[in-house]
Image (cartoon, rainbow, N blue to C red; front, side, top):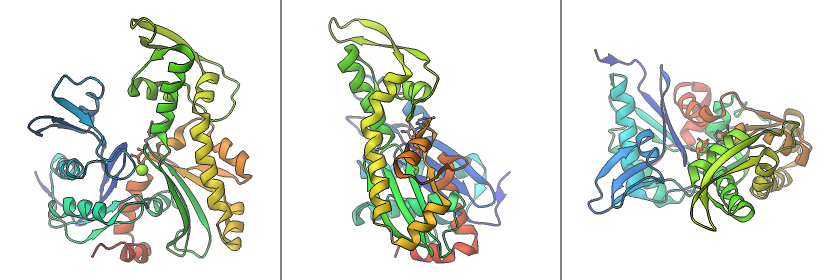
Length: 342
Ligand code: ADP
Ligand code: MG
């Protein structure tokens, strides 16, 4: 049975690590890693999303599994377009939805070029979209985190994703100051890889580094000092080996990239007009994106800035929920109009 929806709106978070799709009336209906696997010779696409992610670091000759959005913006335009089309089809087909020229809002990093914007727009057009909106990610994240973006008060959002960290101060439906840096979750993984290489002569892959971050990662000193066994290759003799790594070691490994993130927050606060800065000191900073789930990240930022810090509810979904709310809730009309792609 196909459902005809009353609302015809699709909100999309096209993230460097994960893509989420929100459909009006239904909420978030798809969450998949932003990964595409393809044949190197023919360029035929072999898998998209979760299935492609499982292939990272495990592909045979001739097959590549890549993240088309990897470096914050778009590393591979054509693959990004194909991936987006596949996800939109999957989200509607899996839910038996009939969508007639839905309006689509896609959150985009604030540092994106006009060529990249156009490519994202083209992907949406090929999915037979009605109006296309390209709101900036920090605005979508703030709406998804229920911050009062339309009011004459300063709200600060820090979205730590896979490829980029976006810091923005919002007031009266607009971004007042912002900064986008290409240091986020991926760099924490990379720092763990480098640490194990340097200190334990152990080579590990990206996925193992991320797992170590999930299990033992922390930004701030904790009383726990649990350990985790990591398997990799001994760089000295090339043989498999297990090394026991402690929580303290992982914290040390990721401290440099974390400090870069803290500095971006501090710089943005310094550039914030005084009235808005006072609002932020009173109301606090809100963290979104997967990086907000790193243990102690709120304490670290709060200690370094002397501003209270809160983690949004369901930080991984804020951008998707924000794009969806923007399309369906008339109180965000101004934000929506400003993000219309013409
Ligand atoms: P993007 O918007 O770039 O797609 P996401 O907001 O989906 O990124 O966040 C993905 C990032 O969050 C990844 O780098 C991932 O490792 C990190 N992440 C997710 N969960 C956790 C966790 N529990 N602890 C630390 N980092 C996490
Ligand atoms: Mg994101």
